[in-house]
Image (cartoon, rainbow, N blue to C red; front, top):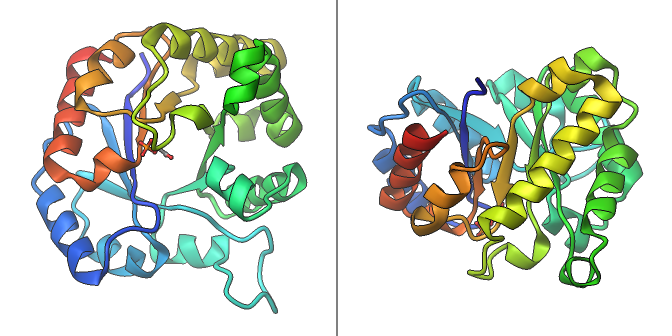
Length: 251
Ligand code: PGA
C-alpha cells in the first residue's frame, strides 16, 4: 500500500495577500490518509511553515545546485531544510525549458537535496512531438536514468517521481487515464529493473498535467498512479480539497 500524495504547485502565482488567503482556506482541510504538500513561492515559505498545521506539509519549487557561496539570487537546500521545508521539486519542465536546467544541473540538485534531507520530487515528461512519434517511454526512461540512475538504493528509496507530460501542463488537456497508467507502469518497471522490487513497489509516482476535480477519479483509479502534482487547480482551495477527497476514496 502506497500512501497517496496530493501536491499543489502554486508556481509564480499569488501576491502576498492572496497567498495568505489561499493558505488560510486550506488550513482546515481534511487530509484523510493522504499526504498533502503545498509548494508556494520561496518568499512565503517561512511564514507558511510557521502557520502550517499537521495537515499540510511545505515544499519548495526549486533549490540551487550549489551548496552555498557567491550565487546571487539563489536559495540553497540547507536554507530550505533549516526553515523546516520537507520537499523540493526538481526537474520541472518549466525549469528545464525556461531556465536551461540540464541533466547535470538536475543531478547536482538531487544530490544537494538528499544531502540536506529534503525529499526530491523528480519531474519528468515528454513534449508533444515525442508523444506523437511514439517514443515517449524511451524519452522519459532516459530522463530518469540520466538524472537519477546513479543513486544508491537507499537514496532512491527516498525519492518521489512525478510524470508530467509537457503537452498536458496548463493546457486543460490531461493525459487520459490509460495514457498515464501506461507511463507510470513503464516507470515502475524501469525502477524495478534498476533498483529491485522493494523500491519500485514503494515508490510513489504522481501524475501532473491539467489534473482537476473532474478528471481526478479516473486517474487515481489507476493502479500505478499514487497521487497528483497539481498546478492551476491547486490555486482554488475548494477544488484542491475535492481532489484530496477523491484521492482518499480511490488510492
Ligand atoms: P497544471 O500544472 O496542473 O496547471 O497543468 C501542473 C504542474 O506543472 O505541476
